[in-house]
Image (cartoon, rainbow, N blue to C red; front, side, top):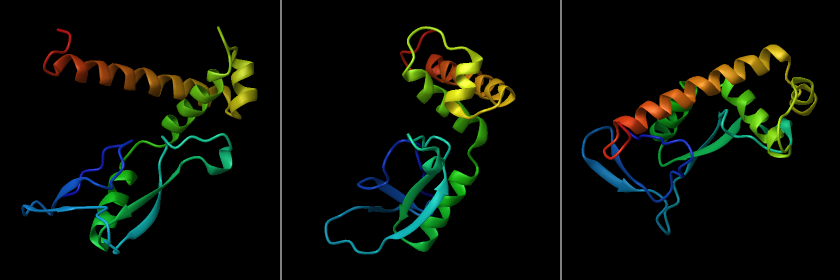
Length: 139
């Protein structure tokens, strides 16, 4: 099965097709077969909110494309997107940012901001636990 790692491009990586040991390379020169899809991706944050939340994925076959789409469909969406909007808005501020400023900058409601902060806190804790369990991680 093809494994998608958020934030890593698909091209140029080896894949094990269907777990059958049929590794092949994507993105080789001269390779023509490409299957495209636009998927919801809450980590795709842009300056213009009209273009947020979507990512182009490329598969080497219709089956591979379907696997990529399925992986993105299982990801959390809304709260992560809101947290990304907040991070983008806060980038331009130095120091503290008021809730009113966040509402104005992000277009989110106070309730959405609260959910985004909760998502962020859970994600930070999840990543900390992964880091601590990794070889050489903090114990």
